[in-house]
Every structure is written in structure tokens, then in C-alpha cells.
Amino acid sequence: MIIWGINPVLEAIKENHQKIERIILFKRALAGKVYRVLELAKKHDIPIKIVDDPSFHPPKVPPQANTQGVVAYLSEFQYSSLEDIEKAWTDTKETPLVVALDGVTDPQNLGSILRASVSLFAHGVVIPKHRACEVTGTVIKASSGGAFKIPIAKVTNLKHAISHFKKLGLYVLCLTHKTETPIFELDLSIPLVIIAGSEGSGIRPSLLKECDYLGKIPINPTMESLNVSQAVAIALYEVNRQRGFVK
Image 1 (cartoon, rainbow, N blue to C red):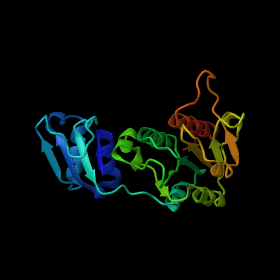
Image 2 (image 1 turned 90 degrees about the horizontal axis):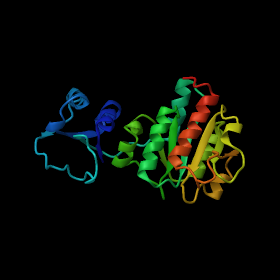
Image 3 (image 1 turned 45 degrees about the vertical axis):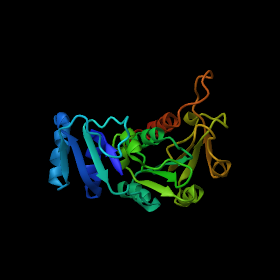
């Protein structure tokens, strides 16, 4: 796996330095936070290559990528288990908050959702193994390194994962336009899984049947819908607002 950008690489070193195989730094970028990358890499004995050729483009990095002069090569991304997500709230004795994504295929959306989930105190994110985006360098860049700060479980059967959390006492909220109930009218202070679907097809009917609550985010009727990452961020904010932002 390849990641790029100052914050994603810094977070990778802090949270998962054992998985980093090597780092490339551009000499022209050696200032400020890039020096921090250099210092941390040396501290953890990560191989470093400093490049002085401005025309050099690191192998396998997308041509349009803004690397900020920092690229890291990692072994495969380490996904978590559902038990790891459970541990995240039992260790802190907090009210559980989990995000589950059904059919989100755009890496920018997934990255933004991960960033929002970390920023707004979710304990984990669940994504399906098939017909969905997985964690890539683009996702990590869009998450600003947040992908390394939260358990992400990749499951074969999303419905089974939801059932697992329900058995642990969590309730399920589906974000959907197929209801007249705004999320602001629901009690979201309870242990919660938030399910969001793709912008095209939404949440599958089989998953909608697992929901305890259906909630929508009211928007200007001249607009068809929100971006899924925006919807998730708003829902997470509302959960925190109702919980009094206790942390």
C-alpha cells in the first residue's frame, strides 16, 4: 500500500510504524512538519530515501496526487475486528457509537467519513468486503490520517455485523429519505449504530429491516440529497450534541 501527504504519513508512523517499509521525502519539501516525519522515521528505524530530483515521481503514486513531498510504502492495511470496535467503547466506558456503510464506493467519501468518525468520537466503522470501497492511499489521504486512528472492520456480511451489535445492546439508525422523521426528533443518546448507504441506491431493503429507527436530515427541497459523507457527519454531530459532547 502507498500513502502520501504529511498528516497521513505522520499518523501512520505514530499509530502503525511497524507496517511501514520505507519513506520517500523530497528535499525541496524538507521544512516544518516534513522534518517531523524525518525525525519520527529515524526514531523508529524506518528506511528513508531523500530525493533531490524535482521530476521524480514515486512509483505507483497516482499522477494527480498532491504528495506534499512525503510518500510512504506500507504492507497491507490492518483492518480491525468487530471485537476491536467493541473494545474501543468498553475500554473507555463510553456509550457505543458505530458507523456502518452500505455500498459506499467513492474513496473520497469513505475518507471523509473516517475523518468525521474520528473527529466526532465514533468507536469504529464497518464496511462490507464486496461492492464497496476499501481503505486505499486515496482514502487515507482524504481521511487526513484518520484511518489509522479508528478501528475499521471489513466484513463479508454487513447484516450479520449489524446483528452482532444489536445483540450487544446497540440500536440501529438508518439514514434515509424514506421517512418523515428528522434525526433531530430521535433519541440518539442511546448505544447506536448509524447505517448510511450509497448516494445512488441508498441502504438495501434487507438492512432497512434491521433498523430500529429511520431518520432523515431535512434539507432545502430544491436539492435532491446530501453527499453521504456530509450526512454521516451531521448525524454524528447530532449524536454528540444530544450526549452533551461528553468525552
